[in-house]
Image 1: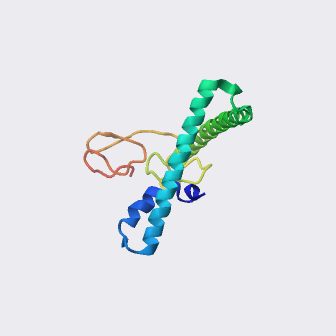
Image 2: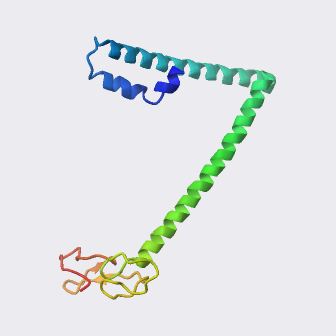
Image 3: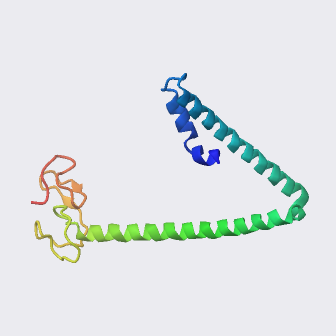
Length: 159
């Protein structure tokens, strides 16, 4: 139980306790609980290693009830990994669609973000949805659409 409470925060707590007075009973208590949680985690890791070795040595016939639990857990983990992969793919697809919509609504001439569905920029009147390069009239450098100033000479673009 203590490992659950301090599990991820153990090293953080240890680090913070170094700034506190070490003779304070609260600090002593916190340090002792953190150390206990660390030892409990280490103990659980050793038990897990023992179990893995026993399973490797004696096969699935060893502790059949626990072997069945392990198989169920492995199947659930695989299902969750597939759900995570599907959710990540869905997230990337959504982000790409949002980026594309933002690019279509961002003026290639002045860089203004316009409301969705407009064909022309509300700021400068340029046609939206067309990603173009902007050539600087002063030095001829090609700049990305939406750039306000030339990256080469600093001339204001789009006016």
